Image (cartoon, rainbow, N blue to C red; front, top):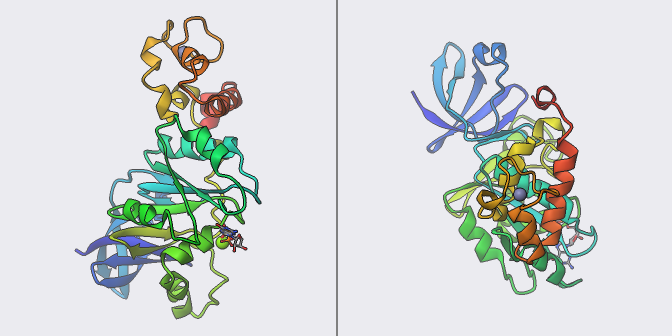
Length: 291
Ligand SMILES: Nc1nc2c(ncn2[C@@H]2O[C@H](COP(=O)(O)OP(=O)(O)O)[C@@H](O)[C@H]2O)c(=O)[nH]1
Ligand SMILES: [Mg+2]
Ligand SMILES: [Zn+2]
């Protein structure tokens, strides 16, 4: 039976890329019964039934997001501009934390360095283990680094409206604007009416076009339980075993190695502040509310 990945789902149909072939499929009824919705990025097994192809099996997912609906994401490019819209390290850190928690590699991409200095943004992440890339559209600087990270991975771009995602995608792959909506057009729909995720192959990897993808679901479903939150800030990890108390929340405990590292300037203040805000947001939420 052919295997492939879901390139796009639209109106109850799924377009599965199986090698060179793009197969239009319906999902087996069993998935609805189990309340599993196939999404773009899913690896699936397809079989031919009377009248058409059906998705027979969804391979185990590495991760899955509801908004935007996508599975098996490897890299999330989080795009922020130096100005207009003004960046918020809290928003950026929430996105990086959700990505890390879901085993997605977050990469920070800074745009509009020609309008304002990237210094503050870069300083905020200097001591984190996160990759930062500055884009300069005048010289094309930063584009090759992004292409290199796409290789072998399924990637998506997110960030507030106006930060320059479309500009960046157009600079990376001018042919994308052309490709976008190919399937929708086949179905006789307008190019710009579609909001579905669609995956494109580029630079030896896969790029998900996620229209209107400002942020990951930051509703409760995506809150990170307080015990796990510390691991969503990878630069905290080397210090955690040295905290005096097991289960240290790194908020005001005596003998906290994370706080000591903050004091010593080894952890950035903005990153710690984001952790503290997120911790305080989640600490009073009951486990059953998280699921
Ligand atoms: N000066 C400058 N303008 C940019 C840059 N990147 C994007 N823009 C502009 O910012 C506006 C929003 O960009 P767009 O790509 O539509 O943002 P999106 O909403 O994230 O897709 C457009 O007018 C772009 O021309 C940049 O690096 N420098
Ligand atoms: Mg856009
Ligand atoms: Zn601690």
